[in-house]
Image 1 (spheres, helix red, strand yellow):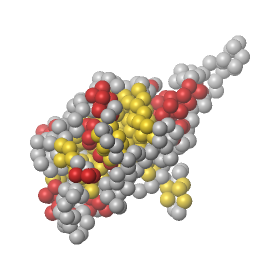
Image 2 (cartoon, rainbow, N blue to C red):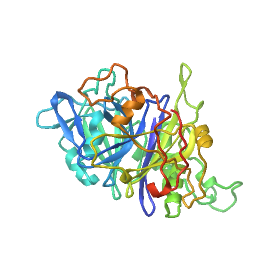
Image 3 (cartoon, helix red, strand yellow):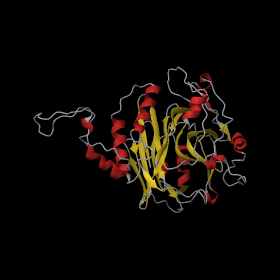
Image 4 (cartoon, one colour):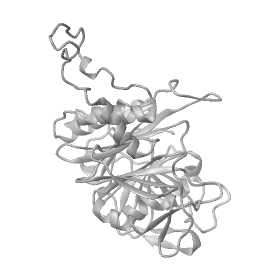
Length: 399
């Protein structure tokens, strides 16, 4: 399961927890402008805007989990099993398979308002990416600096919901969450008062009792309420350091620890990664389950008019970060890992295969990105002057 949040201080931030029992070899991936996406039935589209986000790259195509474009429009897909019902192809509609919905919207829209117009003529189809990668049942949260929208494709059609709360979890459908949260009207961050007697006969015996009744379990409905409460009551200074730190604390209120959500057969759901993106600056921050040091990648420091995807394998082991890096004493104060992006050709060399575009012959030996194999060489260090940020000095990690 997952939780997504839209948040603002001076700048606007968007991110999510990805909660699952295993990783699919995801990496931070930059898609340049004018990148070609090949769709079923010979259809295709090219992106007008560059974008950065977390993706599993299959056959040279980024399958994004969450992503933001260069104009500050962000989107995340969250599991919606049992409720998501995709459509068959329809005449007179823009037929977009669910796996391509994020880049299709972010590749051509600057704002939620523009995306809403496009969504009115779309059919989110059930066409798989490949035989091995069937459609996942999802719903989506879309946000910019001014608006937030929930998108749900169900059996009775496509539903668009304004989301002033700026939070999304999983089942049930969004109208349930919007109604359910009203049960917590009396939950407050303020000190508890004696409303029981109305005569001040009772007094709180602990700080935080105003929040009594706030759910703390890992169900979707509870995570929605808890994340909304923490987000709406958060107080942060407006600097980048403070804002990003606070954002990860909001996500931390609903993260999942191994052992607390048992799925059977020795499997547990955990928060595989947490992300936060500054929508104005195009900086994508993330941390993983085994590495809580924050890593940052800047969209606008790369060549956005190139022809190839740029990959940033995840720095996912704290041990490696500590062994091969160390904190700078900086104003930002994060442990930011300086990673040099790997282009398609360099990535092919590292993985020992060609990551070719969808629809072309795939090399006999599958690419590492499809199977979570992360190279341990070829990731160059960048200085703070090169990136405009202060970083860990090249902490490399395996997946």
